[in-house]
Length: 122
Image 1 (tube, rainbow, N blue to C red):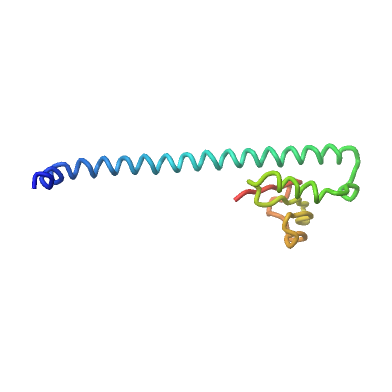
Image 2 (image 1 turned 60 degrees about the horizontal axis):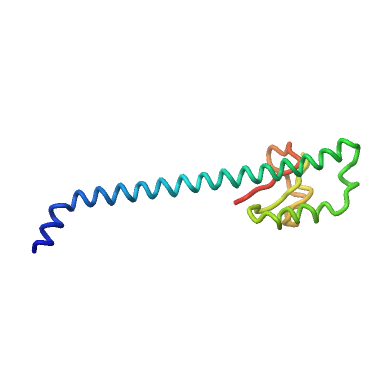
C-alpha cells in the first residue's frame, strides 16, 4: 500500500521527467540525422565537382565527349567506390547521356540540366 501511495504522490513529477527525456532524445536523433545528411550531401557535391573539373579540363583542350573511351566504367567505379551514391548520371541539355541504371539513358534530364554531372544519394 505504501508503494502505491508513493506512486500516486509522484506520478505527475515522473510523467513530466519522462516526457522531457523523450523530447530531448527525439531532438537529438533529429539533429544527428540532419547533420549526417548534410555531411553526405557535402561529400557528394565534392565528388561531383571533382569529376566535373576533370572533365572540364579535357573539354577546354578541345576534346569532345565522343573522344573519351571507358568513361562509363570510370563513372560506374565512382558509384562502386562511394556507396553513399544511389546513382551517377551525366546529363546534357537534351537529356541523360550516361546513368548507372542503363534504362535511364536517353530520358529527359532534370528541369535544370545545366550542370555536366549530377550525383544523388537517398
